[in-house]
Image 1 (spheres, helix red, strand yellow):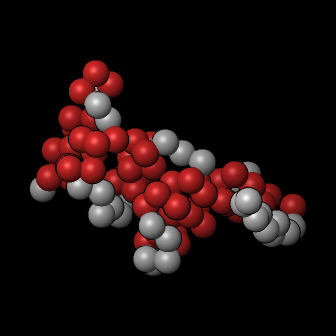
Image 2 (cartoon, rainbow, N blue to C red):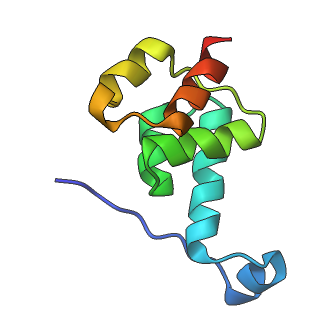
Image 3 (cartoon, rainbow, N blue to C red):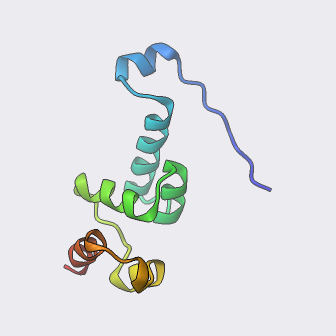
Length: 94
């Protein structure tokens, strides 16, 4: 059974930051991943994003992921691959 914990964030803080609760959760996931406290998979789950969108988000911020080409090939079967997949794969292979 999965346990969840609620964190109270004053509405004024969300307003000042111009963020929704979902955006705060996503930012926390990115930060914890960047600090090595969460794996890619757990951070992605926390952010509520697909593998591709979370990888894209990290890449847009210059955060290198440990996900490698071999992992991507397992996640996306050939029938589901697209130009975006190939672009991401090429960047990870560097």
